Image (cartoon, rainbow, N blue to C red):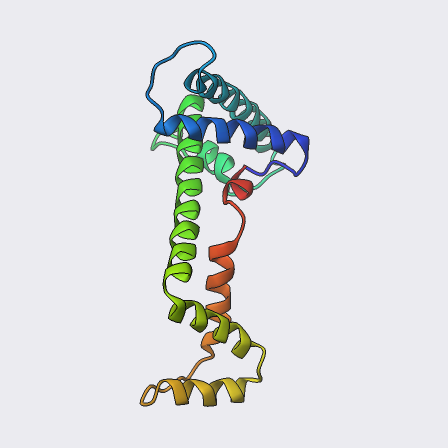
Length: 180
């Protein structure tokens, strides 16, 4: 959705965290409860996304943006067979919120299980440390080490940058920051 860094972005992030808390609460709507606060946060998030939809619609009409620039413009650009709008604004808001929740939970769960695996299995942790140490070596030395570690397996490509990329993906900040 591409909200620039700053206070305009911090507000939806805090509201989204309140919304996520409600996913595990008993849904009883009483004043001054966390569930009630999460419902209020949900409404504010919906208003923010609706404002973004209005901004993106104007940008699309004036052709100031690409139809595939981000999630909202992609949704706004969807058309039916008769060239009418495929999704209403409310459907776009619902889909955007669902995608934010799914993306947040996926990356959080991945990090949780990765840290748990590293903490419980010291051989995996040692392998990760060794992999990072090897990554700083020249390619030829890495290949020699890989052949010693894994006899009979031929390595025709350099696996260490891929390994490093996978680790960086696993420890990157919440995907929520990239979506909104």
